[in-house]
Image (cartoon, rainbow, N blue to C red):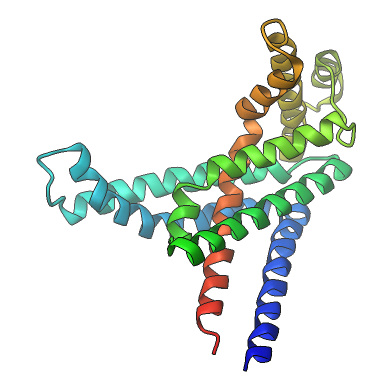
Length: 251
């Protein structure tokens, strides 16, 4: 029986890794479908989780709502779920849409590693403290995963694996190379280059008051790349919940 359980645990771990790879592959090859799926998944999860959260949170902020009415909870929860769904969809689109396939390949790798780290952290919290993967993934995991993703992209840029573009080059592309009606992929590629240029500018600006190492840390924290953490946290919560369900069902 112990041998069987070990083998089944191995199968679950392999399935977890394959799920992460499949999600990163999906985003890399089909960015628009991935963005739509992310928005829809985030909205569906939010419809359930936001309502549960608000049922406890509203009385905390408003003393007169000791027992908030169900229509109010559903209305506010639906609006918040919708806004988060739109945000997650846009973040997913600008993460994977672009014209530089080499850059997007490395972005997919960093995203996959970040998602796997998030799923592993949620599993550890669930095993050790009986934390709910859905709730922790949806409400609490986005900031640390966003920092991890942003740090990974910054590291690749520092190693010249991902090329940084100067403001002058971006201006040239914007004026002379970008078509009058650019595609979403072209706009996303330009947006990524602007993000990298802004991060470099932050580092240059902060080095006047602190060391370069700390300036890079601050740039990682304020980078727009942090928003991708919300996308990674949604998928990490789904994977972790599935893994824990499978593990608890083992003989």
